[in-house]
Image 1: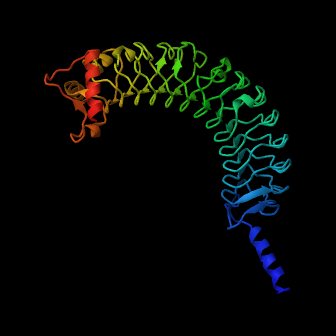
Image 2: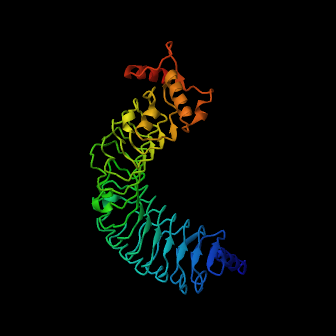
Length: 414
């Protein structure tokens, strides 16, 4: 028994420390496949390879990184350490990765970073930190990353109210930043004041009750894509809300609680091409909401509570794709699409299913989309599902009281 016990202990230790198996492709890309046990990344597994440009250690059950693990890699530009079990990075473990431009640390268990961790990584272009447990970013931690253009902080535990307004002061070249699935409520108004070339800002699921000031500052004229979906925004009453976002092309306000919106709120966004307002609580559309917005191509208003659709709201716009499905209107203006075409708006795809249609009104719009060769969701009108309500008098009634009646009948029997 005395001789047997040390052998068992040694084999156990070897199993815990079993290295991932690494393969080299094209003499430059190192990809490692994990063993069955957790592993501390050590010097020697991927280090000291002059020609290596990419190292992929994804899903390798790595729990920690030793010093000099990336030593002797003068050509290295890409490191993927995603989907591991790393909960801390000690100061100095990334010092040898001076030429790296892409660092993926996503989906680990990181909570924060020691100040100075990125001091030698001045060439970083892409830093992916999504899916960790990061709850705090110390002022100065990002200062060395003056070349950084892409920063993903999504799916962490950050709180905007704890962020310094000067956190990104040296990161003036960031073009893409993702805060989604963090609590950005209470963030400093000037949080992004240093950005000069930002193109995309993602604030999906950030606990916002209104459009945050830090997302619409005057230095953000370069933004093309703004995501504000899945928050608690209930109204946008200030017509100047987006006045600084001259170059915005895609605005996502879906899955909020929007009940009202100012009729001129989009007018200042001259380059807007797509607006997503689906899954809100809109009951009425302002009469001129999208009128004469020549570059606006795609409008999604599905899954709201809209009871009346003013044709004027779309006149003279560039709308080609219009989605009004799953609302509460039972009729549209007579010759709705023709009225729009006469104003210069040529709809090519139109979704209007799952509304409490009057059967006579539905027939009119179906005839119109067919005669004008407009694509629509014909599968929803296959004759098998209930799609409209008929009264004894088969005529399209276009009065508010009639709309209320057809809503009640449709939803009580649907």
